[in-house]
Length: 156
Image (cartoon, rainbow, N blue to C red; front, side):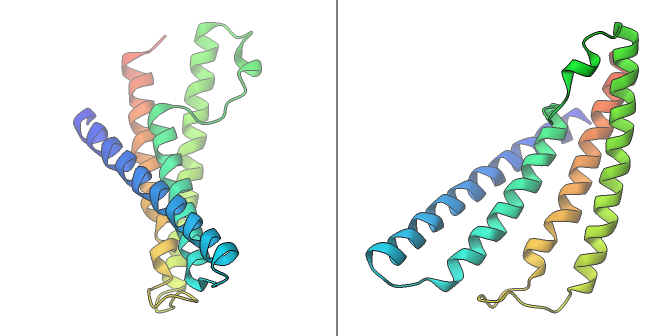
């Protein structure tokens, strides 16, 4: 399971790098064309938005893998190690429920938008919408891995 997780983590990080490069390059191109060349590039805003959505979802998957989502440590600082461990298990269980809900809602949205194309590009609009189900499955996998580690290897 760890080998699969490590491989997926590396692939997601590579995807994040590519997405970030695309986002920055097209944004700079858009700024150059609009304010220096006075030529509007209509498709660039849509590509940047798509890249940003993928960046957010892929980043969320990596945050699940590495346990770096935003937390409120002030709530758990005063707890004993056993109660802190219990709180972490409860949070991971809640994350699994939310990830399942994200998958369900985003998969339903992808199904409803099947056959539609992007506004300025001749590509399916599902190119961006599919990020929800794909990344929610990745988040679910990584959360299961962290939960397994907490329950089996780090049991208090």
